[in-house]
Structures are given as structure tokens and as C-alpha cells.
Image (cartoon, rainbow, N blue to C red; front, side):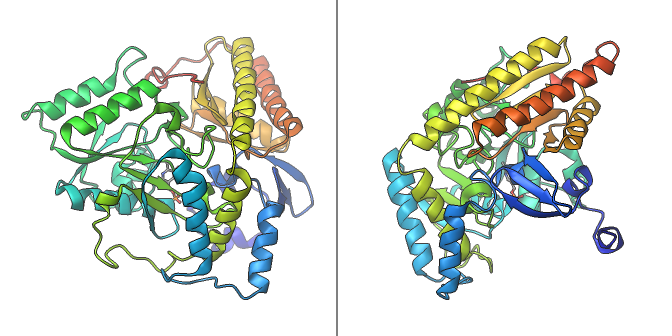
Length: 436
Ligand SMILES: *Cc1c(COP(=O)(O)O)cnc(C)c1O
């Protein structure tokens, strides 16, 4: 369709990687205008954990719309919002012994991050926020200051401030615990690093290249935060809502963040929705201090409640994710072993996995080959050098296998053509590989 070239901004990105006009979707499949079927291993960058147009939520939404349920409600109390809160409290928070206040922010992830950083700064009276190498937290100015990627940062057009970057787990090699360095600089009044309001971290860095933090590192990070009076913010926007196997990505690490951000798959049906969870004593907002027109996306409340009720009332879904995660892990390990020869590494946890390639070009060649074979799969990382497996958590075993087979064939083909292994670039080393 020419219209996209004619009047849509050059800022488009995914549209360039997958140049088709898509028209329908169901479960783990997307269909283009010609009716071609594509297996979706991108899943809205982690927004479609429950698949496209999940029939369970669709029915709830259709009933709700038919009954003239409220669609937009600013932040007014609505039954849909109340019912979402009840389900979230009963099925997510209480069983995990988590006591948090829920703040509805604007419906994008970045707005939840903005709110989280604002409340942390206001409560502690400090402005500095510690962030990590390769972290991604969104592209509005506050979140962008916390984001590492220079492609995004360079577009700010203004000095990004108020953050200080530290090496993420594994950044300096497997054997170096970078929280020791953080502790050191926060202890030394001449380190040049201001006392932080908070530390913001992803337990698995999604856009940064599926880098995982070990549970031990997360535990140590929490201890350093506590010692220096910094709040711990876990940005669970991509890793949360089941992606790593548990509802929250940090459950297995046995930590208790002060603030948590959620978005992406929270709205269940792919509907925009974001929240900040904070310890009750941190909820020092004055009415309307952080506002936003779309904090009351009631259709998202309806779908989000349906998702929680259906998938998170017991531990079955979680076990399924872990089982499929093990399968993906095994397959990727065997692919890397067979074709590796220094070209590939595996990364990830649960159904949040990736194959790291020695350079971005190799990763892009693989994803392009996959797309020709009707698999939608993206890359992430500093040089887009990690092929990122992010299929819906609800995918069938058959289609999961099919998707991985397509990637394996792509890799086989690419390796057959390629000469010697290209030289490795430094920053691809170090990050931790596999964990559970
Ligand atoms: C996607 C993402 C964001 C930003 O969410 P948007 O809805 O794109 O603003 C923030 N943090 C993490 C970890 C993300 O993956």
C-alpha cells in the first residue's frame, strides 16, 4: 500500500522489518491482506503474552461494549476498574504476600516509569537515579535518561539528566559482581556519584539483548539499595506478566522491590494499560500530581481482569510457561552447540530467550530468512545482534517447535554460506547466559 510511504513518518521501525500489510490475527498467528499466515514470535514486543484476540477476553469485551459499559473514565471509579483491582489483589498480590498501592498512570510503559521515578525522587528528596548499561525504560525524556541505547538517547534533543549508569550483571565478565562496585561508590563520598533516590533495573533486559541478572546479583542489589537508602524499582514491563515463568520476574530471586512498573501484557488483549505498584508508605502523591487523560482505559481493565482470572487463579499456567521455557532453552542450546563455532550464544529465562550472534548483520540475516519462511521474529541488543524469541505464552507445542525449526533452518543456511567466523566485538561478551 502506497499510503504508508506517502504520509506515514519515517519513524516507523517494525514496519520496515516486516513489510506487509497485516489484516487479521488469532493466537500465535498474524495474517496479511493476501491471507498469508505468519507465526508471531514478536508478540507485540511482549504485549501479547496471551496471544492475539484471545477468545476468552474477546467475549468479555464484546459483552461489556454491548452493555454500554464505560470505555473512558479518566480516573473515576468504575465497576470495571474496581473488579480489576479486586482480581489483581486477590490473585496476584495477596497469594504472594505483597502489600502494594496501585497507581494507574497513562497507558504506556514509559509513563509508568516516569511516575515511578518522580515518586522515588519526591519521597527521598534525592534526584539521582542509578540505571544500568543496556537498560531500556522507554523514550519520554525522564525514562530516556534511564535508557542506555544511544540510537534512542541521541534523539532527545536535550541533555538527559538525573541518572547515573552502572554496569549490569555480567557486564564486566561472569566473575565480577558489579553490585560490589555500586556499594563502593555509594559509600565513598568522593566517588563523584550523588546519593541516589532509587535504582531502576530489569531482571531480564528485553530491548538490551536478553541479558539476565542472576538471582544472587538481584539479591545483592537489593541489599546495596537498603544499605544506602535507595529505593529499588523493578521495571517489569516486558519481563513481567508471566514471561519468565512467574507472574513477576523477580519472584524466584526472593526480593521485595519498593516500586514495580507493569504494562505491555497487563492489558491482556494488547490494550494499552500501565500501572505503578508501590509500598504503601511511598504513596505520597498529592491528588492529580501525576495525571493523564487515558488512565481509565476501561476496556483494558475488563481484559486484564479476564486474563488474571483465567490464567493466574492457580499455578497451572506458570508450570506450562516453565515447561515450554525449558523446551526453548534445550532447543536453543542444541542449535548453538551444533552451529556455534563461536558465532552464537544463548540467553534468557522462562519464555524470554534469545540467540546472541557475533554481530547484528548475522542476526538480521537470520530474521530476514525467517520472515521469508513466514516467521515474525525480531532482534534486540546494542547492535541488534540478539535474535529474540518472544512468542505468546499460550502458543501450542506444535507451533513452538515449528517456529524454532524455522530459526534453526535459517541458521543452518546462513552457516553453510558463511566463511570463517567473523570477529567478535567486545560488548557481546560477558553477559550471563542461561539461568533456570
Ligand atoms: C517496552 C518497555 C518500556 C516502555 O514501554 P512503552 O509502552 O513502549 O512506553 C519500558 N520498560 C521496559 C522494560 C520495556 O520493555
